[in-house]
Amino acid sequence: MPRPVPNAIAVLAPELTAWRRDLHAHPEVGFAVHRTAGIVAAKLRAWAVDEVVEGVGRTGVVGVIHGEDGPADDAARRILLRADMDALPMQEATGLPHASTLPGAFHGCGHDGHTTMLLGAAKRLAETRAFSGTAVLIFQPAEEGDRGAKAMMDDGLLERWPVRAAFGLHNVPGMPVGAMGTRPGPALAYSDRFRITLRGRGGHAARPHLADDVIVAAAQVVQGLQALIARRRDPTNPALISVTRFEAGTTDNVIPQTAELWGTLRALDPELVAPMIEGMERVAKGVAAAHGVEVACELGLDADPALVNDPAVTAFAVEVMREVAGEDAVDPAMPTEMGGEDFAWFAEAVPSCFAFIGNGDTAPVHHPEYDFDDAAAPHGVAYWTRLVERALPRRG
Ligand SMILES: [Zn+2]
Ligand SMILES: [Zn+2]
Image 1 (spheres, rainbow, N blue to C red):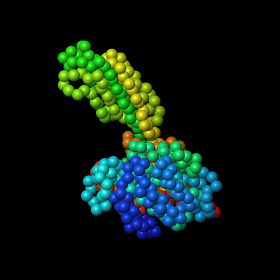
Image 2: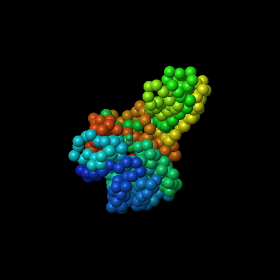
Image 3: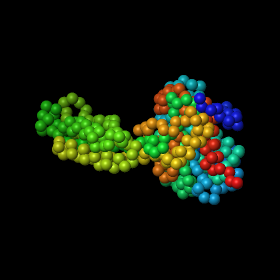
Image 4: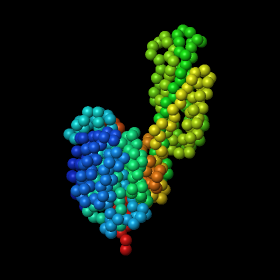
């Protein structure tokens, strides 16, 4: 059983629930998180957070909280905590009283809960300041596919607020409320998109010898990609290629002139990416040459790096989790996943730990019946607060 949270945090629960349900009822997608960012900034200011900066990476918010003896003298006494604020462009089907009021937008990944947990931590840290150094709290837009993390980095986040380590937190349905976990090293996958377009003469379905059949060629490309990922990769090193869209033709008696393949490459090991992309190009060009058709390859589009947790920072975060949640409620070696998470951009730049917190027995994230469990929020606040206090211990 996970440990109960300290009383000083437990009393925040009704407030956390109210914030979370308000955010849930008013979801905002991508970078258009204007209302959410406004609420976050207003609350941080109301709690006398030392520095509140809006518009970082378009709509991100940064809140800086100094410990009891003022600003940190250098990056060694500064850490970064990150929450994401965006919802998904999908329809909610929970039927809950606090359900989305906006058709086609839904907090289906629990970022409403993530924002709430970091807000709770901000309130508590600004009140108690039982640490020495500076906590940089960031609320980012556009985690779901639009690379809000990268936008904040490109806007100079880490130059304006250099830190020694960064921490992220995501809820996990199916894990008990209050339980926590993470894993050192690669945790989530590199992910990209690709488009492969084959072009030939086309022609009558009854006279294939006078046409170029891009459908047969594209089918071989699909199989070639699967052979590549199965036979040209160390099988102990996880990676995958999924072709997710195969578009060609309009009717049953015409061989079309183009066939288009879309898909994604995923890999946990950053070293695998370049050889796999080279291999994909080789397969596509080789098959096209064999069929006498043209091919255009757009590979590695919108690539997000693999999320690699720093072993030392992760070992430290696990200690904090054990203190907060209790030894038995912490999994320090969770399985890897081939999903992506744009916190990877921060983890690539500074030693980091991305952790997970139980969301109880709910539908999975990105499912129309998913909801963040409000009972999880105080546990997240307890983790964030203790993390800062232990990473930036009081001097003397
Ligand atoms: Zn998501
Ligand atoms: Zn998410």
